[in-house]
Image (tube, rainbow, N blue to C red; front, side):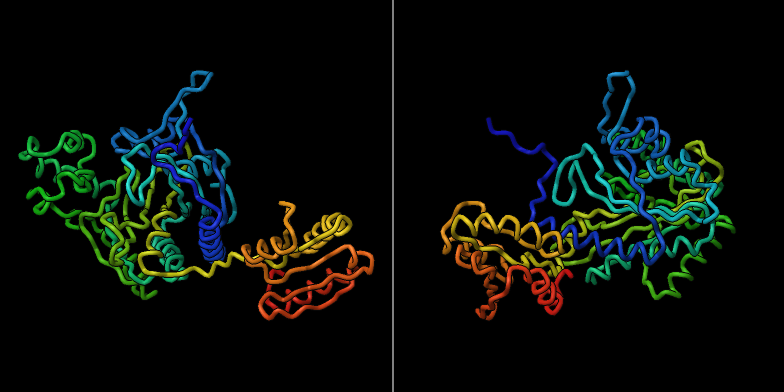
Length: 429
């Protein structure tokens, strides 16, 4: 029986995992400097959360969710995105009552969407996200964008493009919706089936359609920016001013609407412009969602956030030929031959590990030559050679695999000796 991973999923093997771990460490470090704290939410939620939070008219809810019924007859869904879950946790745990406002959170999580798998778009995807709730200040919008851009820059990416738009407040958005309905209604029969439905449910989503992207009506569609009221226009200008102050370049795209119903005011995407990256260029996207906390049962609380695909981030690093400083090495490897030496090596490895030394040994009953080859395969920096005679003499030979030099050390002193060497080498200690 040949069982393979389900379509749209991949195994992340140990050598690749090290790259993921490095990327996650950099992102966590950036989040800490921005004073964002980690939150972890369940992999599945009540289906109603996403129907209400993400929106019934979105492709995610209508076509892409993994929904099932549990034994109690409850409808549950594997989370397709992170914001709704974090907002639910914010409301349920009454974080809106915290004396520290806004509440600034980040998360790493697996998301699940039933869509056609392709390069950089899987059915099980990994996402880093940020949510800041409790402040209506446009400076928070700029800060969230700055955090995302800082993550990319600290990993070495240069071919980046930040695109922003304003979806306005509810008044501006309603006026714009009516204008879109009037504009697209004469062309309704020429649009795809999805857009014909969107025309009555959420006409802004028509602008995001991939099938009708080249339809002439798209090019003549009214701009959201022309329908912003004074408050919305002032808000957007402040966001742009803050970005200018931080020397973060951006492009205003009047057709940027994002794919989720909860966005208002600032919407943004960060794209890769690297050669060979692929047709789907978006690396991260987000925006402000004032009103979402209320929709999920909380008090009137403004919020803003974004989601960043880790798979797509690694693709962008590869497209720009950026090599991450990931070393697949081992501090030391114990080579033991002889019954007493093999027995002593078990305790030796245990003791070294207890004292912070990264170490491994042979478990394949290899001869001494084979054990040295095994040490080479795992890129051991030092090899500790132990035979029955060394056990009797209470000594062990430490071989530097770079220079070939060998030093005899008392077994009782090996921990302090290795700690001093690794400290000089700039190792883990």
